[in-house]
Image 1 (spheres, one colour):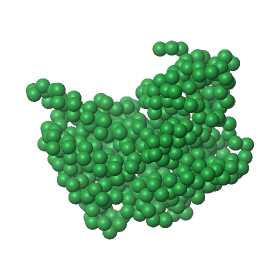
Image 2 (cartoon, helix red, strand yellow; image 1 turned 135 degrees about the horizontal axis):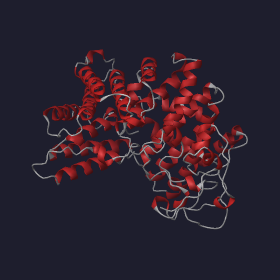
Image 3 (tube, helix red, strand yellow; image 1 turned 120 degrees about the horizontal axis):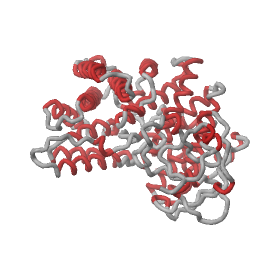
Image 4 (cartoon, one colour; image 1 turned 180 degrees about the vertical axis):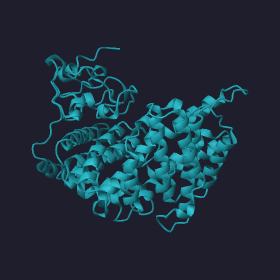
Length: 502
């Protein structure tokens, strides 16, 4: 592997791995330290010579060495989420080649964010992108009230984006990416979206760093949480891989300050809404690797208590089940880290499994009058049971009766949700979990058909679920008849994989 160049002076002094980001190491930034910098000859960078960005024009003012987040570079397990902030899954400078001898200047923070907001809002392109976000993206982020004025992705994020420059960058980046793909506009998708995304990441890093030393204003706290969620939606819509899922760690510093200052109450419903969604995305990410779980069970409990019906309308999973599976994944993380013995972990799993099997559906306060919400609860309940069964015994064959009972329950329940119902967009993760253990061709065809329906309806493509399912099914197809070894979808994913769709 080619040498990436020397680490920054600060990382070298502390004998720690450096991400070699320019102009300053992001690992120093996230620790609140001054980066000592690099030798001058390592300051040049160019346009990516391979992958998605091959031949692409450099975004104006863009930091090209940080431009592509579309390729997953697996991170060592020992790297903690905190040290990976803004560096996970991005190409290093050695993967870039010189396009010209010109020194590429990094994106500079605007001297006056208010003036920058006024300037950007005055661009004709901005109005187009904000309108696209409002009209096309917002309605698919929440069930049933998608196109209503009280859609929180409209009523919370758009006004906040007109006040906070980082969130404005993030919204414009997501919208440019989505509109560029819909209209086959490569410049919009590959240049405009990337530039705004990079600016959003830089603004987010600055705010998280600032939150370590001072208390952010309420709008600034909410903007940080919103930026993280928009970046995650951008990731999911691009590749299905949470290259910025690591930013959930950054949300924790803001969340802790928020809890210390105000707690979670009805006075902070905007913050509660964002935290609830991030807490669920955190769980989805932990399905592919419990060691990546970031939120604590205490925070999940406070979020569940403070949230209203919008939690289920956005995420689908009932809050009772959200807390049970969150507790399971926390125990899985503790076991992975060596903090629990196998016996202790097994007891925790069996207790959680019993809770899910005995969960009284009548306790579920359905978010709307739609009669299909109990069906949604059933789908998530058995998807979580499946995850627990696999934690108990990852080698148990898919043909085991208890596994197949869960698969049948999920597929039968999803069959009750028609394609023209917005609720179907919430069911990607349960469909995936059932599909990973289904053994018969007609069930596999059904799962793929439903995932395709969701993609057509939402106009967002999350490629991960279908790609993983094909890999699992292909691996099972070449097994010998007497080989009952389970083929786990976990064998084909990184810890950054996300299954939920926008």
